[in-house]
Image 1 (cartoon, rainbow, N blue to C red):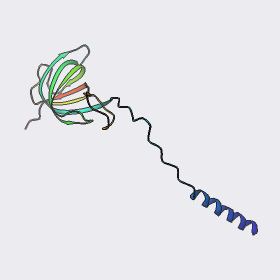
Image 2 (image 1 turned 120 degrees about the vertical axis):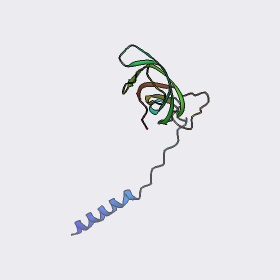
Image 3 (image 1 turned 45 degrees about the vertical axis):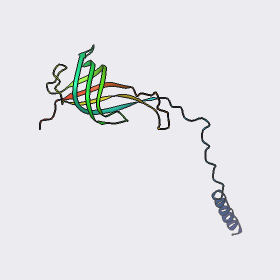
Amino acid sequence: MRKLVAVATLAAIAAVGPAQADKPTPPKPPKQPAKCVPKTEGFKASGTLIKAALIEAEGHGRYNGTLEVNVTKANHRAPTGDQTYTLTDARVKFHHGLSATNLPEGSRVKLHGTITQLPNKHCPTAGFEPEIKVKKVDIKPAKKK
């Protein structure tokens, strides 16, 4: 019986010990701030076609040229509004009777590509211009009203 009481007392003391230990000190901030090196991130944008000038490149479905698009939706801080995109060996898919020579104004356009951006809002933006590369374009006719 005495052994049982002694063991129970030691167990109670052992359980209380870690609970009363000091909390660890919080980590110190780094001596140097994070580097503001631009990173590349994928983006998607969609809108309506204003003007297009496409030239077929080598490879099936690949085109070079320019697209002027009124961008209504975009993610990852991609610009909206009237934008001119330069295509270099981009994959372009035409839907429902459209072609590189038959692209009416108001056609629906979806763009996929990459955009370079600074890693956070604390980086200086002086002299930085995001670089946009379009990799894939889908063009569909305008919806009928």
